[in-house]
Amino acid sequence: MSFSTILQNLWKILSQYWDVFLIKGLSITLLLSVLTVFFGTILGALVALGKMSRFKPLRFLVTAYVEIIRGTPILLQLYVGYFIVPLALPFLGVSTFASITVALIINSSAYVSEVIRSGIQAVDGGQTEAARSLGLSKSQAMLKVVLPQAVKNILPALGNEFIMVIKETSLASTFFVGDLMTSYLTVKGATYLSFESLMIVGAIYFILTFSLSKVVGVFERRLKASD
Image (cartoon, rainbow, N blue to C red):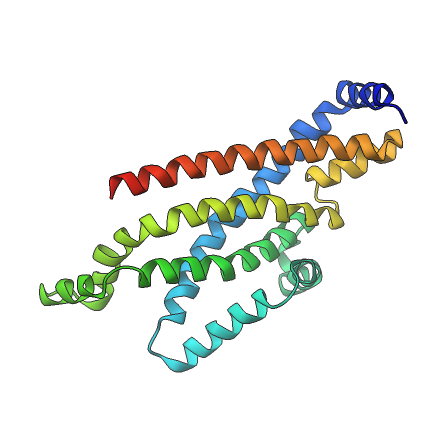
């Protein structure tokens, strides 16, 4: 296949199916990523606090949760979510998109919890002691003194997690949820142009993740400068 033929095929695909890639596929990928990072951060914060708890049974359960999620393939977890979530919530009529989103959130929370935990532990212990000496309870010291300082350590890592999640959502195409890789499968089936369709999806992923990585880098440098 000549280079000119590839260019012609690329133009043909983009002119006919640009909306499949840029409106349907990209929007679903971004929606999956935003939901995963947002709810994964909330769940991850709870997991991090549980892992730092002095209550041993809770700490054991939370640690086991993190190790199981981090120690098994994400595709396996997506299959488990695809089959288990609808069975666990039959009265809600859970869609495939919702099941995959829940699985991605659970996966992300295990990694985010370690980011949050390390961010909290990076704050000087003297800050907590000073807060307690002023009459704050342990929970008040955590919420009003430690966490605001830990945010500087956590936010850049969360930005990188968002980039990672964007790439991980490509596995959701296994279940045809409408993301970018699903768009590739759709266009490939309609045009029989596998290589060119894959090139377009790869370019979109690269532009998206490269742009976000630069934004995260700028944000990280500004945080360091503020220190």
